[in-house]
Length: 109
Length: 118
Image (cartoon, rainbow over all chains, first blue to last red; front, side, top):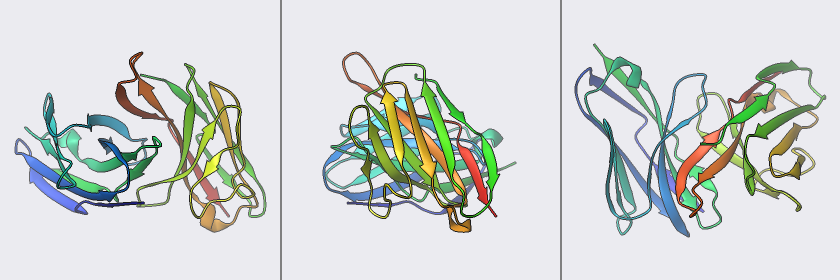
């Protein structure tokens, strides 16, 4: 099974940087995904890591360390529209995703 | 990425009745996934639907309660049977976006079905 932990809430100021950590314990790791979900909407894909290291996509970056069972999502130059829930999800070898409980990020002016 | 049309977007149902949710994908996919998202919580996988075989259910979910059909590679339905207020939730379908070389571009979700059971 999967055990995925991420903080419940984070608050940051517009223009700042926020790092959301995710730790996991899994049987059969086959990639880690980050999703953004605004209230009342479906999750949207942000990033995917299957190898160790940093993946950068514009203002968003994601890091993975498989040996430590650890990932983070880095959000730079925060904008008000970045206020949302951020979900860490681990894929197992049978291509199923298991989601963490999500981190609600609130961006203040 | 794949585009998924999910219907209905929302419904209010009487307890004891059933609701069938449909997902249509604009491309052929091997696996389709059904999730439940209860209020204020994260997504929980209900089952994986493969064309031509029985769906695979996760622990805590059974076929009698959540029967799934997968008649072809672009379509699937999930039925929520004999509903109770505890079934009030958002239900989402999902597929994985893969390149021809099977590189993952993430999973795309349908827009969700918000179900309220009264």
